Image 1 (tube, rainbow, N blue to C red):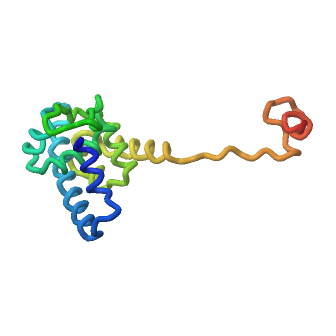
Image 2 (tube, helix red, strand yellow):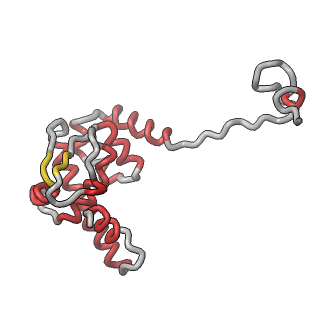
Length: 168
């Protein structure tokens, strides 16, 4: 069975003890934070290897590494084959800095986008700008409603009900 399915079955289990799941995630988030802190020290250096080698490098188990690879995949310059990934699959952690920062904001992971290591990568204004861009990209803007007696949005000068709003 592919590592990702095993990880997701374990981490998102409907039947697991809630306390066990909470401990799993608390432990995972701490390890995730440590890995990102390490990666952000040299953001332009590509870290690559097999899943097992990276787990060993960061002193974590294979399942935690699988969860990490699942989480970072959307922020990578080139996505890893996480769906069919096994312990000996070669993967890369080469990430797009702006995309990673925005994805951390989108995930609501303040413990990650507030890591002090970001300060050497982006100044405060750039971090605020990326934060704002991400938050605005998630905002749904509803179009103004056009009422029957409003001018028609097509620009004809007629009332909406006598133009594009005409039934029939």
